Image (cartoon, rainbow, N blue to C red; front, side, top):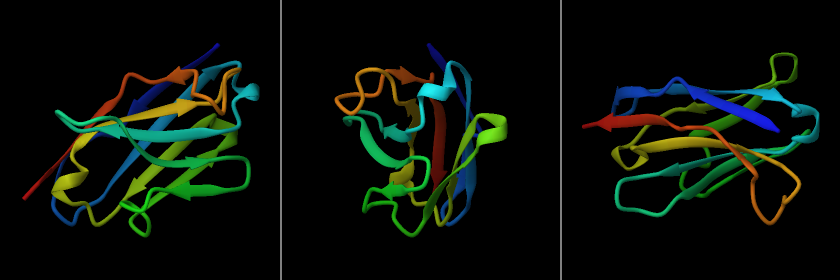
Length: 118
């Protein structure tokens, strides 16, 4: 089992930046792939990006503005969000690889709210 806890969300103005953190605990050695998703009110959950041991991949909607990184020593993954827009407002979740990957991510955090105000 892997436990994930997100933090770093908050209220930010258009054009501002936030850095979200995803702290992992438990059997993290089996979860080399971590992803960020988001869900806005009334909308379906949306893929934001993912990081493996050596690669990152981003949704077109955030490419060039968001950056995912990891600190293996701290078992943490980060989502640096720059040039934020109102449409980035959502609850952001991190998810980690488990036994059912790539069909699905088995482990999820509780989410952290990001609100971008205009």
